[in-house]
Image 1 (cartoon, rainbow, N blue to C red):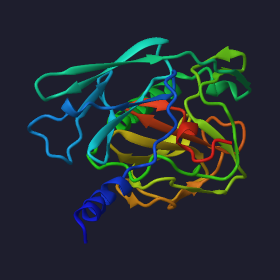
Image 2: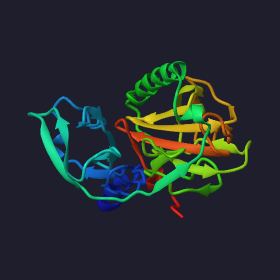
Image 3: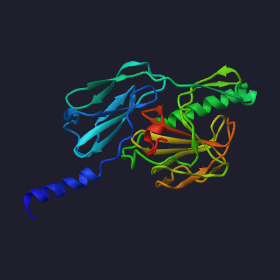
Image 4: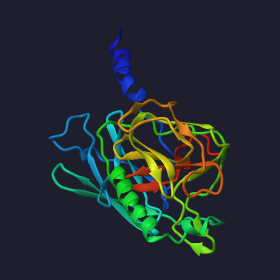
Length: 279
């Protein structure tokens, strides 16, 4: 075998292992893909150790592409238009990489729900605060394993709304914008994990209803809400395609559907950017 062909075969596994990337959209609620400079690696790092990239105090997802590293940075829905930055830590010193966040207009959505789900009692408000802290702990989780995939099918077949980012008005009162994708489907329709990972939490939440959280690695987590059934347990390692529950309308919901959320560096981002078909 000649040397040129041998060299090509040695390179091919690294190229084949590269993940398909989501759609870049550097807007509030979107993502920025940054190819890191070669100097991002510190002398103490092994070739398989990703650089530490900080995005607003949270570690960003970094994946390997051959011999290069790519940061996939979640942009909070509340981020202002303008210049934003991440910090590459280590090596001979911290380095800052800036990027621009462009504008995006999101619609307003008016919904009618039971009054008790808008104006909370003291008991319900206390429950909500406990659950919010619980979700924050889940989203702060960090594991070193690289995600199996970053481009996948939606977790349930159905009509996907473009509700991500919409300003929610419940019974005439404005509330926080919507931070996930709603997929309408009949109650009981199976919900499947779109990518492998570890189930880090399940529970019955005031607003979200029956919910499952999956850690896909390096600060990339997913959430599945309003389920009528939960078929997995915390600590369970699952593969892509594993049934995790069924569509329902538990919690604050006006009809049976799945609320699907994706979080990068503690920022809820638009799941549509990670779906193979965005139709």
